[in-house]
Image 1 (tube, helix red, strand yellow):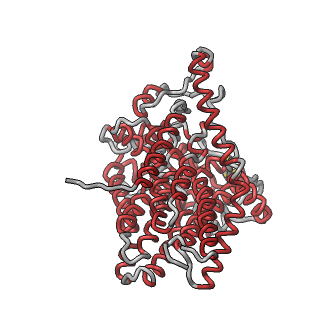
Image 2 (cartoon, helix red, strand yellow):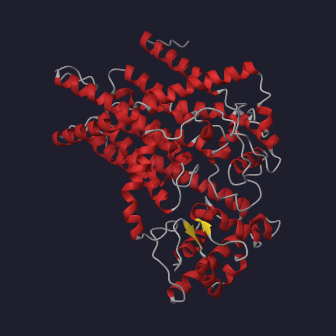
Length: 555
């Protein structure tokens, strides 16, 4: 017979946490599913989920099939199988990630009330109920939760590995699973790596000196997440090989596609226009040197850099590849990649022989650096950071402009697969909403608006920079004394993730385009920086008074 004992304090904290979660779910229930019906956005993920549920992997091999990781489609399918509406499932995932992060900090925070505050503050992150960003079937609905889950598990691994009786293995496994899901939700996951490298460094150093663990144990713990991530890569590669005849996790990461894309964007134009690719002089030059490019010349031209990667794939399909090549997808896949290889080889050969003037790229997807970018570095960093800290654009209201679009007559599919109430596609219907329901809707959205503005938009911009100063000063002092606390290390891990993400988004903004949604994964880290700095301030004050620090040690 189970004998479960729980203290009054823990029972109260659990009760309050559950009450906060239920309150939030009650508030956000007012949001209808917003549909744009785009074959490269929400419609793609819903259709892929339908194919998964039917046992067809990701469906036919089109230009969209392997353009994005399959995790969000898997998430939609999982919510369907569990009979959980998509928005509820996404809110629960984010709440779970917030809880995991709080539990990761549990051993190193003596005053547990801070943890309840951290959970509440993370839970009501405004961009988890901003309507334009959270109400659709978009992968950004789970991306912030997965990013927070990765960092939370990384902190949990560190805090458990650096005490002699800690149990870090479950956290290492959790980190591997979270990292794999995060990596295959969006394609720019490289920004999380610096924080994970920093985590590994501190696990190695403090795990040995404080946790009294052998090097074999430490290396084994660090290998677990890498093995799980590698397993996810191999599993995706096998499934894609089985269905499409190509062993790759994502097509845009294949050698053939990267060769073609990098070749196209490397050709120098004498009429270069910022934020655009493949200007007319470039197309004219490519037609002369590349038979492969001549196959797609009718379907591709000067385009904004932000959509070029998708438009190129549309052009290749229109030229007779992907599902237009035939009915056997196991032959269509290799044939399409062979085309990309030919395209890349022909252009690179023309560059090498001097037929084309080509620039050296920063990477396969990043154009050559120019003097213009040097002037934009600090203004762009400032602008992106300002928009992040002010929660720019936050609005939980379902305004009249937010009506669904159904260009392919697939609203029925959205309704059945997501289990959500669909936002109307007819603006005239909004005038027929019962007055009582409209008032109830307004009351909920007004509360959400007040929470977001009063506790985040009006507060965090003033607290963030002092919080960063506190973290860096305490870290410097502790580093000099060679007694860096676990809370400080956790704060540095969060800061590393935040700085890395801001840097990546700023580079994208300089070279391509910027949208507020690009910052969604950073908001939980802004909140964590403020919370952790407050914990550190209390810890320092307690230490100076000769009391007990957050590790329970008498000073």
